[in-house]
Image (cartoon, rainbow, N blue to C red; front, side):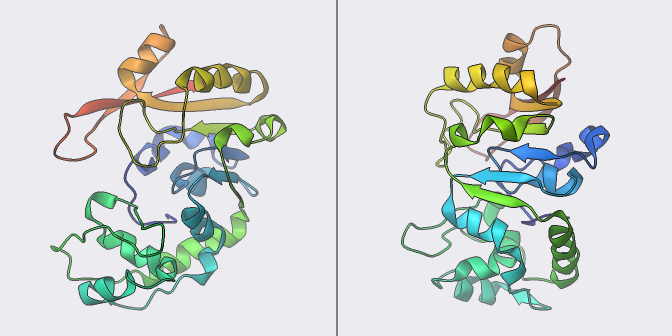
Length: 233
């Protein structure tokens, strides 16, 4: 189950490696599509995200419009609307490489994967919607540094910032030294902290720790690089 069927940089493939945290209270300061906590968290997860449109989707998931069949023609028509976000569950399934991108003045502006002619997502959405209602997530919009420290106490914290030098348009970590200092402070109060970054970066910061990795290729123009995960108890 997912809030968005596809999402560039989403961590859905890591869920099976974090099953020991199922049912725990979770906090995601860089929520994105909140794939991990949506799949594993107990009620009342906290999702913080800086993109106000994505925040609106996360917090108003029950207002999605998901017909029985959504076609490529529907994609071209709905993405131009000022209220395109209501069809984001369908639009994102068509989005090339799972990119989530929109114009500041409205409109979803990702090219579609033209190999897909139509999708049937109604049952998937209804299942995800039922789970969203069970979770009752708290969704906040703002800089990750503004998340109150008390939110991290005894929680499982998922830290998935834009990777350094990844050149993504949504990067909102101005100083990575601030981020790594914050990780140390969060570890002191949380039950566990799960950190994602390039594997070689994690190996430098946490020598001797078990770093789990998988090949990551954001798009065909960039060299593949190992994405890493470390669990800090």
